[in-house]
Amino acid sequence: MSIGTEFRDILALIVILGSLYVLQSSYHVLTEFSHRNLLNHFAPKMQEKFILALDGVPVRKFDDPHFNDLTNKVQGTVNRITYFIVHLIGFVSEVFGTASVFFVAARIRWYFPVIALVMVAIRFVVDQAVGRQIIDSWHEIMPIERKRSYFHGRSCARDFARDIRMLQLSDMLATLREKYSREIRDRIYQINMMSNKGYYVSLALDSTFNAFALISSLIMIHKGQITLGELTMIWQIVQQLGSRLNGLSSSFFGMYSYIADLAVQKELLDLCVSDERLPTIGALDSESMVRDLPRKSDYVFELNDIHFSYREGHEALRGITLSIPRGQVVALCGENGAGKSTLVKIMLGLYPPTSGEIRFEGYKYSELERDYLLKRIGVAFQESVRYNYTIRENIGFGNIAELNNIDAIRKAAEKGGAAEFIRDLAGDNYEARLSRYLYPDGLELSGGQWQRLGVSRAHIGDRDVLIMDEPAAQLDPVAEYEQFKAVREMLHGRTAILVSHRIGFARLADRVIVLKDGRVVEDGTHEQLMRARGEYAALFTSQAKWYKDLTDASNAPGEEAM
Image 1 (tube, rainbow, N blue to C red):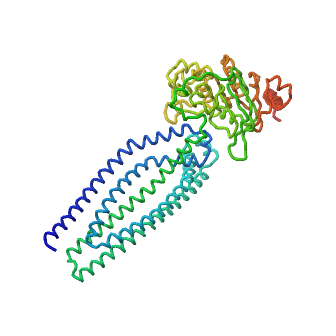
Image 2 (image 1 turned 180 degrees about the horizontal axis):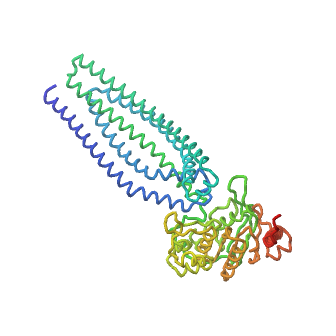
Image 3 (image 1 turned 135 degrees about the vertical axis):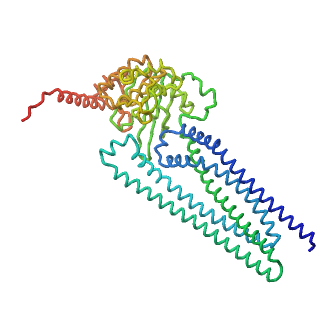
């Protein structure tokens, strides 16, 4: 071989290795740039996308532990998805880098890259098997971590501090936290052991390849095929090839593990866009769905053979069929657990029925956009949400369009019975902040006062339909009756559904519907049902007798001590 030929060969190797160095440098710059920009721009947008997707999920989904595990997983995967892009860029870079070193190694001995390819195949198989086991283990950890976080959160929560101290629950909660923490540590130890297995396989392959290359080089020196200087170059190329293979394996393993994050996100999004969403959210961009629709029926609600189950084999509603005409005030009565709140959630579209059909003003719920339904209905729940914001915002959240309309908010407070305590406690300042959890000067409200804010929230906007689901459960019976009475006087021809297990208020209604075991057992006016001497009369009489006995006992003269 001439000197010129050898120089060209060496020059070719130098160009290849130089190109590899430039590619590596470009890779580091590109990955750092991509990672920063993805975290700053892509991750927040993905987070918002998932929150918007969750906004249309039926409320009952949040009772499903598997669904809650998915939402928790997604919170972590949104940021990690940027690492998938980084590993993808790295994998492409490593492929080019490895190919370059393969070419150089083949110029020395043809079997070097062949052996390296066998090593890559073995590594990929091992990485995939180990990666699958690690992903499964992390999935097993998520439910345990959710339980650990729950008990840890309760131990630090302001609302639980009183009970924890009075009931002496600290030791029990510490035991539960330690139990779940220990389970998580054991799972993580198993994950580390699985990772070590992959590392040991890689180490064995690297050692085998290096030993083979070294022995082959020594044999070639012994036969006079290469010089000592060429041995040094061969050894450097072998080391470079091993480094490339490690990088290729690492990038592949990273991509594979983050692909599992994509699967979690897809599973959650599939649940979010399933047919269980009701009313339909699929036509948000359709102008025909957001404008006011002509009424097709004189009935506000029409329910036909509605069944609903929280879990298989346990029906909460059983064949509910009823119609509520416009302008009627309906009292929905029954003992605790009769199905009253579940029926209200069905009527609001928060829960899709298991079977049966429900219509609003003649339209099937599948034909309506949720925003259209809710802008027509004002609702106050038994457990109204306590927002740690101002009084104005707590009421204004009932109708965002009126959030800064102080006159509308004051009017709603008067209707909801909150205006009096706002004057007494806050000096009629609707900008007063609530709860000392966030604000040192925040006002602390009683449970009944919070409920009055919730009722006021339902009144803002003067909606056509008002649904009050035991909104005065934390008030005394007299205060509850007065609140329902005030509601009745303010309706002025609007439709209302009033719900309570204390049925003295039912006399205010045009119609009384009695539920028992998820069925409508009676339907009529107060007078009709009292004459029928059925379920309603028995409930009304027993509650009236209880209050009478309680009043008589409180008014009885005290006995002198013996």
